[in-house]
Image (tube, rainbow, N blue to C red):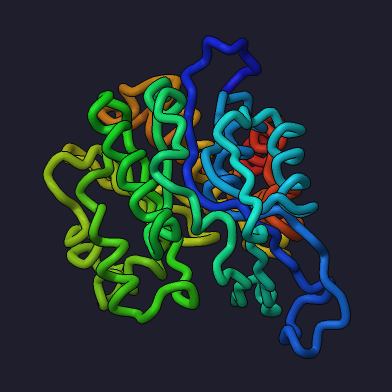
Length: 329
């Protein structure tokens, strides 16, 4: 897949939140029962930016952290992983967001957030580096940045700038219900920018949430399709993923691994797929190329579940290729 290349590689800009995840050092216990936590950098858009860089792609992150030790730690982690940090801002008056993540015994998660308000929520439209956004080949974002002002207006302005510059828009809603005022507010907020995207990735759980229906019934998935969308992906955890374009649809199997923590798996998947898209746009029309890219993305997502935390678990190209070849033998 992606090779390490110079600065002429297509730039993928990821917009949104970066925070600290506190992950229990023992799985299967509640936050109250947990005796210790592992500090792990996180936040879906930041995870995607790092995933891209670790796979040899070129990425930048746009978002705000606190002018505090955690904020500087996160900015340093982006830099260490090869993410361009020109879009990272520091807020003097708000802290970096924190999330306490409960790991169930099956590796799935529950979240408790400390954001009232956190620095990422306070990004303003006038602080945006629109030149950086306009220089991208792909602009990627989630939905958490839509929850409160002023960040919502900044998100909308960044998305408008990308669309007007003809940049491919990539959307992974990453539903985090505890952060929204209500379930209805989450559905409405996530749907409010739905038709602006060229590429959307949702999990099976998110299909169920957004459609109030069975995520494995195709009619429910197709209710999320709209004219102008180039690719809709539904990730089904270890089972792999389903893909839908205007011309074809199908399923690509996942990989069985020893799952420890699913945090970041979807971000590893998205980062991998965005690298493939940035290298070859014909992937939207060429089913063989798309299936190959999705098999690679599934491998990246699978590897990410084998370690605690998101960014520390994101794979390199060699790791993903090794898993694929091991499964092909």
